[in-house]
Length: 91
Image (cartoon, helix red, strand yellow):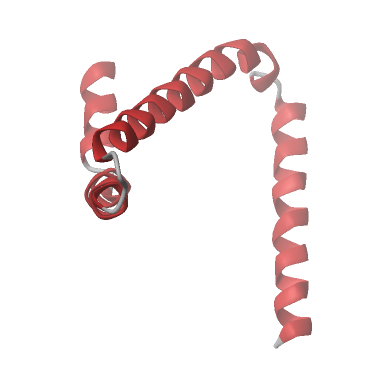
């Protein structure tokens, strides 16, 4: 069931198609070596998800603590208020 959930999240994510079709397709076609561009994009994506998975496993003990999530929520709220304040000032 975990593999099916992961597959569903991957295949039902519209960003997968936007990145694959638009980013790699349109930008890759403009490159002098489209194959090298595609290989580089695929390598970067693989590296990103590998680091994300290993980082998640490494941070799992800290992320199991409620205090960690309170601090993360506080950081997110602070950023949201900062963005809102900038929008109010600039508007």
